[in-house]
Structures are given as structure tokens and as C-alpha cells.
Length: 152
Ligand code: DLZ
Image (tube, rainbow, N blue to C red; front, side):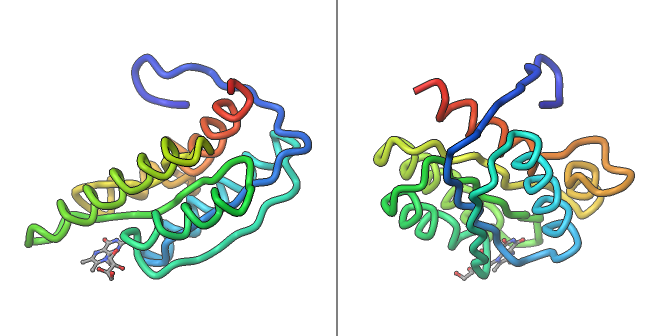
């Protein structure tokens, strides 16, 4: 984990089944988040990972819900929402955040929140786990979801 006050999280997800649900907007940044998530699954010895792509971040909650209801032990949602010139940014951010929270609470399945909500592409790249990035939010979402599954 990164950022002020963030914990060091080491997890062992041996034997767990995971669904990785990833939006498709902002291709280069999504590739970074997905790569970071995949490396984190490997570090955690979690080998059973099903990856599902959806069009935009707004579509993440419905597929995360299906995955949780299908019996996956952890769900990780990845997306990138970049502020534009209209209120659309706020609506997508609110929808995906509230939607994923509801999925986790309703189903009891941890949902890792790997959705970047940023002002510009530069902020997204800094958090995307790409070469030169200072943070890896895809990996952090995986580690948080596994740690939560193990805590239950
Ligand atoms: C429409 C839209 C816009 C403007 N921006 C983004 C974005 O930055 N990131 C993202 O993941 N999705 C975006 N979308 C698409 C919406 O999430 C959604 O796919 C559409 O509104 C169709 O439901």
C-alpha cells in the first residue's frame, strides 16, 4: 500500500478463487493496473483468476455483483475515470464507488477498489503501476481484497 499512513500488507491467497473485473477506457493506464494486479495475485500465490472486461467503469458494479454471486472468494474492480469538462465525471465516480460498496456489503464478498478517479492523465499514470509510476493501485486493490477475505 502507498500514501501517508498506509499499512504494509502481505497476504497468502493460496486456494482462493478471484475475479478481476476491468474497464476498458484509457488503454495504457488500464494495462498498467491489470499488470500490477496480476503480479500481486502471483505474489500472493493466488493462481485461479478469471479476468472479465467491461466497457466503462460504470459497468463494473453489475459484473462484480455477478462474480460475487457466482461464488468467487474475492473480486477486484479496476478502472480509470478522468475528469472532463462536464458533471459526467462525478456521476460515474459516484455510481461505481457506491455500486461496488453495495456489492461487497450485500454479498459479503470483498471487492478490491482499484478505480482511479483523477483530474488528468498524469495523475493516473503516477498510480498505474507502469514503469516510472510511484504507486501501483492495481496491486493494492488485490492485496486489500485478499487480506479482507482472510480476515472474515
Ligand atoms: C462516458 C465515459 C466518460 C466520459 N469517461 C469515462 C472514463 O473516464 N472512464 C471510464 O471508465 N468510463 C468513462 N465513460 C464511460 C462510462 O463508464 C460508461 O461506460 C458509459 O456511460 C456507458 O454506460
